[in-house]
Every structure is written in structure tokens, then in C-alpha cells.
Image (cartoon, rainbow, N blue to C red; front, side):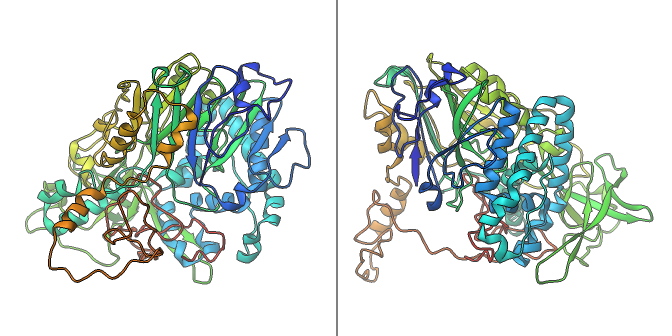
Length: 637
């Protein structure tokens, strides 16, 4: 695990196209340090990196180079303009992370089982039925009409990937071992990668979990499963005003917690052209720098806002001579477009799936015959489907449709990516983020003039309270979307703002948040000094105090009559043993593969899902299968 911050002067370059951005032309260090030699905003971000990337050398790739450096760890890229720079960024990413790019492209298209096998089939079925690739295509088409410059910029990135993907594949042994040949990136592929990466960040998996609880315990139990859970993991961030720093200038810290992957979900990179000179974390497969960036005069960082912006509708469908119809809230049956797609599975027979979309959204589980193939339930005596006011599963067969903002608006927020790169002050970042779509984030930003920003960014629909906590009946009125929430802002308190997925400015927009332990601990640590430097913040980043363990340990200490504990060894120090304390990190458990659902039904969780991090770590997530590939194509745990 490494932490980086622009600092020092060792790699400062002459003749920069933008003297305003001198601060961005600094190397990345293992630990954060304040910008030296000029007023600036210190930026400190902890990230997870694969071992191979930590050891790679740095290089500079210019837009006119035909043979770029072979081993790029933290690419420093220069080009004549933003479009040429996007093409170079695509080339470098294809050379450095070809396998990762192709896995993500296949995930977005729902074709990963074709080379990863049956373990990836449930994800592919979901991706096809949720229309991820089609949504990305529609969003790109709308982007071309709404923002031609950004559309051409994204197209240039895809062109760059195509230019170097074959060369990158030759260097990646996974291609030969899996038999996968690199494919072609379409202009909308980066949008598909972004959507597939974040589709599970919102609340709909939790609604499926709560619906299962309701099925066993009744509707009154939903409140027990729609509250802040006991989880301890998540992303952190904090913002210090100039009054709380040794330099008198703001310090912003980002601590994104993502599953440790090799290579990681982020890519450290520098992007330089006459318009801007930015360092930060890019998402491989997506141009620019979205979540964590520093332009030299302004920096920003994010955490998941834990907002709820997706809905699941229980649909009543029926087959007719013309196809499939869905029952609407006005009691009218309307045509639901349908078609059949075939999912190829390595080593097994292809699987045909029916893709249906109602006015609410794509059907992700079930169909006219119900959630289980061949299982139907008779309607209650003397009533038809339109008469049922309960919305319960009893009655005619039902299916589940997913409604999510980009499918409705044809906008994934890519129009804000170029303005973020061009930002010079927090006001620029603020205006750019007005166009952010998903995932919904809490954002902190600061600039060299002392400007500060703490806000929520993203699109959250206004709808009934039931929509936010459970699956709702599509055939009853009152569950439609009625516009979009205004995104909240929050001030600093005593010169400090902390974001750790807890209830905060995003509280009106969500249902379940992380418990306040991490946020409270960060605030307590920051209160220990009246003024901080970026170099000092490693004590906060590396703090191991686990506040959420306190109540549990108190209860364990009160127990008596227990069998004697076996002696703890240095390699077996678990909570509750003599060698473990709440401030010492415990070793992680051995990962085990969770059971996967069948291809004909939606993936289900056996415990409430967490959105503090992506819910699909390789193939080891608890229930939601993933086609994210590990370093070997076998994708084993």
C-alpha cells in the first residue's frame, strides 16, 4: 500500500506550457509532503497498488512518440492538445494494462464468460439484462449531441487504446493462457467501463436483501435492515482549512479504500498539455482524472456518499401474440420490448436469455413466467392483477425491473471530466461537479487562494419513501420518479471537514450509512494538534485503532464460565486473544469463494451489501458473482 503526494522539486521541468501549474510538475513520493517552493494546496492520498506497478520506473511519453517507454509505472504524458493527450492516455493504458482493459470491456458488454467460464456467467446475464452496454451507447450518442468536444475527446481515448492494445496484449501472459484475443474498443466503451464499475455502488442490492428479510419476517421488519450497520471498512477523507495548517494553506487528504487488486482500480498518472497539467488517479479504461486530482492550484478528493439512487420494481408481465406486456400504475397493460441474446460460456454450451424492458427499466430477474422458471402462482380468488393493492409477491407471477439514472437521462456525467482537468479554483470544481451523475460522491476540494468545498455530487431521484428501502410494485401508483434532489453542501467545523461514508451532508439522500466510528476517530486525531502539515498526516492514514471493536470486547470481557483460551501465537492473533489489542491490526481471514446463483435468477447476497467499496472483488464476493479477473485467467480464490 502506498501513499502519494506531489512535492519536492527534483523533476520540475523547464518550459512548461502552463506556469500556473508548476505544483503539478512534481514527483510522487511514498508519503505525503506539502508543496514546496510556492504557495499551494497539499494533497495526500492513500491508494492500493499492485507490487509490479510500485517497482516500475517513471517515464515521460510525448504525443508524437511512436515507441513509448516499455515499462511505465506512473506515466507522465504530454501532448499538443487535450484530444491528442486523451489518445496518448489510451495508448499508455493499453500498453500497461491491456488485460485489465479487456476484462473491463467484456464485463461492460456481458461477454466475460466467453473466456472466464461459468463462474462469470451470472454477471454476464445481469449485464445483458440490465442493458449496460446499450445504456453506454445511448449515453455516448446523447453526449455527441450535447457536448461534441467531450465526445471527440472520449473517442480519441478509445482510438489510443485500439492503437496499442495488440502490443499490450503481447506483453500480458493472461491473453495467451486464456486464449483471449484483444478486441476493438468502441467510442462508448469507456462509458460502459465506468457504468459496469459502479452499477453496484448504489442501493439496489440492499433492497433485494431486505425483500428477502420481509419474505421471512414480514413488512414490519424492514426497519431492522435499513439502518447503519456495524461495518468498519470504508473510504476516508478530510479537509483542513489554512487556519489548521502550519503553512496557512489548505490540506486535503484522500484515503480511498478499494479491494486490493493487481493491477489496482486506480492508475497514478500525470496529464499535461497547454490547457492543463494535472496529476491524480485515473480509472483504467476512462479518460482524464475523475475522483482524485491536483491541477497545481486546486485539488479534490471523494468518498462514496452512500446515497440511494436506484429503484427495483416488481413487475407483472404477460405474454401476448405480439410479445410481452407489463401492467402499469394506471391499470393498463403496455408493450414491453423484448429480444433474446446468447451468452457464450467457455467450456460449456451457450446460454440464451430473454431481455425485457418495461417503462420502469430493464428486467433483471424473472419474466412473464415469474422469478423462477416454470413456477407460477394463481391470482387470489375473485381478483385480477390490477385489483391487488398490497404489492406483495402473492398473486400473478412477477419479475424485477431496475431503474437507474443513466438509463433514464442518457447521461453518465462525462461532460464534467474536461472541466475538472481545466479547473483552477474550487469554484471551477464546483461548477464541473454540477454535471456529475454517478456514483454519487461526497467531494472535498481546496485551492491555493484558500477556497474550500465540501459537497455532494451526483443525481438522486425524488420519489416515495418505500422506493428507498424495498422493492415496490410497478402496477400501483405513487412510485414514479418526480425530478431530482438538489445536492447538499456542508461547512467546515473548527476548520475541519471529515468524510468517511457516515451520515453527513448526504444523509437526506440515503438509507444506510457507515457507522460514525471512523469519522469520529479522524476528528479526534485531528484535534490533537492545532496545526498540521501534509507530512504529518501519515499518523492519521496509518492509525489502527478500531473503535467499533470496543462494544464487542466489553461484552466479551463480561462473559464468565468460558473454556480456557488456547495460547495465541505471533501468527494467530485474533480479536479476543491475549496477543491482540484494539489498536493492533489483526491478520485478515483466508478468503473463501461464496456460492454463486444460477444463471436464471438474479445474484443474491447472504448478508447486507456494503457500498464503501466495490461489491465484486474478483470472484470472491459474498454472492454477487464477478468477472473481474485476477492475475491468472483461472480466476480462482
